[in-house]
Length: 414
Ligand SMILES: Cc1ncc(COP(=O)(O)O)c(C=O)c1O
Ligand SMILES: N[C@@H](CCCC[NH3+])C(=O)O
Image 1 (cartoon, rainbow, N blue to C red):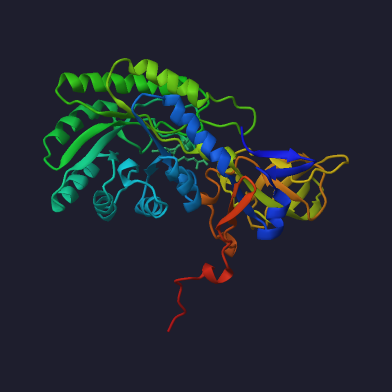
Image 2: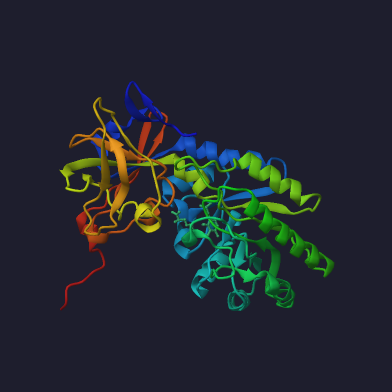
């Protein structure tokens, strides 16, 4: 469910006509709905219920400060993967004590910043990383809270580029090594073992792979307990899919109930790291039709948003719905909806049935996650504005870039 609906024949974001926002802020423009973000966050929080837990929203899905601030106000924690994301969380008023730090390439400087900020836990992805964290903690004369990210070798059944829990993926420490790594970590005085973590991939639409991974983790937790290593939390990562088309992913309530059932009476706090499930359907990308071009083979709707604004279709052949902001009467034609970037892979959607005239506004749905965060300045295109709608209020949470900002930091030769 989301708060982008047609009212009197025009698309609205909560109580505001999308066309009005486009007129004020220009296109392309990302629109987010505060009510949808809040509802999705609460769906996870309430699904886990009374069981001790932390919802650590995955910042990579959408790191806009306004968005992070909405979540921080709800008490959300954050899953980060860089010093930049940590800085954003802090700037947005997030609580560092609710931050978990994932990612395979943490630098010493990033580790130092996170220790100084007082984060909840590092999700350690390799043995050399464990040593590096220990070394930095020793220099700062503190204990680093850690959790081992285990790679359970489970097929998430998702796009190969976003599957992370297989042996051949770069993420986590192999299950076979995990016990030895915990034993080793327990000998290091500047580490504080907190938990175990896994994240097997993104856009999962079935429960089975999650539960498969969970069973393997619970086995490890029990074996460690028998060896005197008691963990206080279990981080199951993110990955719950959303409806882009007609997928029917499990709802947070169903997912959380299955997790809690399998936890049994183990006294382990649960950490969840949802990104897409909170943000994807809380956002749309608004774009305007520049030209309609009749080709010999097919028709093109050339719009002012491109792969630099929304990379998912080009990168993963991802399908996202494209709908008119103010639908017209008439006979639909089939269009490839393409951007101005000089790449054949620059498309937002292919073979879409639409009734269009130049100047029409289109909304690309489900664009709140991995939309703006994956955008770039390719073809020297300024990045789009981001707007957060809250009831009948509209907040510009990031202005469209100016062309001068495109070369900030660059220098002419002397
Ligand atoms: C470690 C980690 N946690 C959480 C997420 C969030 O995943 P999703 O957006 O699929 O919930 C990701 C991205 O896949 C991730 O790499
Ligand atoms: N960027 C991906 C998800 C990657 C998840 C990060 N581990 C997407 O748009 O689907």
